[in-house]
Amino acid sequence: MFQFIHTADIHLDSPLRGLEQYEGAPVDEIRTATRRALANLVDLALQREVDFVLIAGDLYDGDWKDHNTGLFFVAQMSRLREASIPVVMISGNHDAANRMTKALPLPDNVELLSSTRAKTAQAKKLRELGVAVHGRSFAKAAEFDNLARDYPPPVGGLFNIGLLHTSLAGAEGHEPYAPCTVDELRQKQYDYWALGHIHNREIKCLDPPIVFCGNLQGRHIRETGAKGCYLVTVDDRGKAELEFQPLDVFRWEVCEVAADDADRPQDVLDAFQAELAKRIETHRGIPLGVRVVVTGRSRVHAQLLANPLAWANQIRAAALEEAAGLVWIEKVRVRTAPARELDEDALADGPVGELQRYLHELRSDKTQLAELSEELAELRRRLPDELLRGEETLALNDPDCLRRWLDEIQPLVTSRLVGGPKA
Image 1 (cartoon, one colour):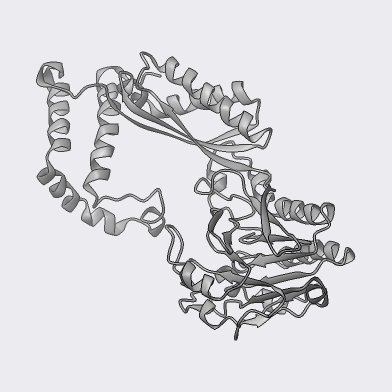
Image 2 (spheres, rainbow, N blue to C red; image 1 turned 30 degrees about the horizontal axis):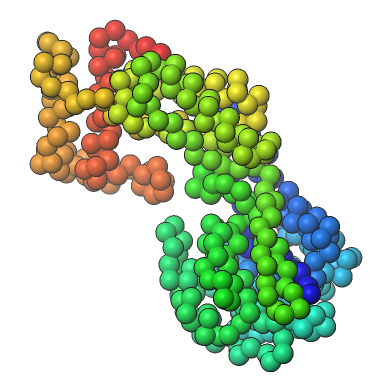
């Protein structure tokens, strides 16, 4: 029987661009999270006396700011060296882009597999355990060839592990690097596939285990929930048992609050605090970065959108009351809709009513929305690149996005026109 750790996508010292612009953001705590998570992984390896550690790519996150990133990794690997724990790793797409990595001397317990062709790790302890680890590093950041195709046949009488950085057949939000299929991996007749690149952990196959361990530490709101590694125990018959081990020190969560039954904004705040309490209990004292999304057809729709900043501050105050500083509210989004559609009788008279009627008509007319999109085309061409990418993109050419913005604008504009902002 033997044990090993399967980890990947550590992204050590990953830059957190733009984090400082969020008021109250725990910048230092988040910025050091990847280091502390890696230290936790080494602690786990030592405590459980594992036989070896596998890193399936993206140890780093592109070029380092300075050599301290690499030196920190070397220091952690030296702790494993003292316990005679070998480490086998491959480069992923982010590592391949890192010029400094090539010049960093590694401790002699760490073996970085070749990027020219697939090879089998040479660590003496692996052979003594009856284990063969096969893998290939990325030679370049954008690797679109099927690397698994050239992995060697299994070594007879040994427990064969494939170490691979891949998107498999593709995954949302990830480039299609080193593409291959589950069936192709199964045909290699290895006993375990330790995969990296996809940041959500997932067991793609049980026989043999084909496993994405996910990233070690969530870095932003698109990487929610507990993060860590797999501790794999292989019995004398060669059967692998997988145990997920959370190792992260800061977590991200999306807290969805249903406002369908709310009669007043305070009801939404109460519902938020109840939902937040559940998440705090689930994560048992781990600090959280939380995005709040308020949804549903609601009677308080207009009140919530009349003054978004004041409403977001009330949410933040409620989080402080509930969590005593354990929770940072990353963003508040109101995605509600009116409890019922406006009709002519419900609209105000005079200029305000005329504006409401125009917005209502514009929102409901596909032709007018398309015309508005065309009118905004020149503005879109002038926008900086950072506003046209990612989840915050200003999709001025998307009618659905325009409709949603009009839903948000109407209560805000009406509030300003009829009496100023209200909390």
